[in-house]
Length: 256
Image (cartoon, rainbow, N blue to C red; front, side, top):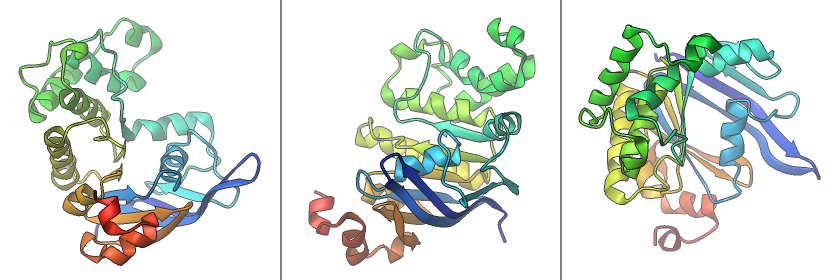
């Protein structure tokens, strides 16, 4: 049985004004899984991701256990160590465009260097070789020394994935990784994430708007509506009726 990497229990988040963004959310993510989170805007998907990486603090009695450690209420030093083990892939790439693809990937190792070495980009030979290997793995062997402002959207996102992988993460959080991409680039990104989850056994939790993409690439789908989980199961169990429950609209309107 695969090891559980992330275990969330009774996760709730209330913003000022008593707006409930999350309500008693519970689920696990195990090694080798690609789990997609779907739902309409305002369903709580982004809040969920921000709670997992502790960019925001959930309500009391919420539990987020990552690799066997409770991270809710964890101190800043411990939390920095945990964040090194969670690779982030962003919708808008979060790259330094004036730097090369290789330099951007190496930024994923900054947390392992002193401020002095990081500021001077004094990376080890081992890390440089690993960064080059990852760019090769992601089909960017001829783009290593291109500045990122000269790359296509899909290429930028692959640089972002390589940067996440060089952290040696135990999990990848990917927040709408294909929202800014065309269908072909989206297909490439999802295939890489799927392959990473299976071949490297690094679980990927992906926030998606595209239901058809979630069905095609996910091992499991979590459907959210109004801050609650209303579906948690395999893609084949995501019936038209369930999709309408998640989105509050007819299936043909959602997929149009």
